[in-house]
Image (cartoon, rainbow, N blue to C red; front, side, top):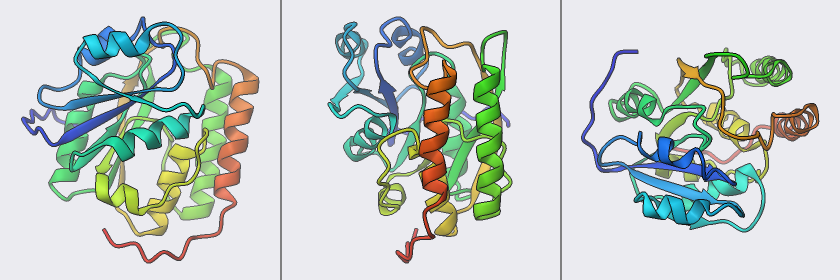
Length: 233
């Protein structure tokens, strides 16, 4: 995608955070100018909230553990017209969201996703890639979407996201967003993004057990019947 410079101040970036003190300075230092960083602390014990606040981020506290719980707390706390999501572990560069936001703002897409392309050894363990591939194929059978990744880097309009009535509060949250958006007839696009080795240990895909739990959560989401909510963008 071409590089886009945006001066919008109506964009919030949700950053789920659990013990990411080491990565926060790099991540927050790369939030596009004028955007608001919402660091959702999910029970950190390493001082992450204080670091985030000192670096100018708005800190949201979500005591319920779970990636989905943190993401949804950020979404409900957001006020911008467009909401972005990005991991807080320095594996993804928030500046990559600028063209995503432009695509949504221009009306070319309703949900824009980043397809992760590993950069360097250890960026994406084999077991995590295998799980992602299996889920992508299951998603295609369920919705017809020919996506390659269910990565966390994404952008969409806040009100439309809230209308999806997302209920998963664990690892299935990102997938449920895509499934319900597809059921609602959203235009969903995917673009390659570099994926760096994360800072610190992964809470989800760092182990086979964590990956299996994530796949199990997401499989449950895929088993849901298409909702009849009559969503309107």
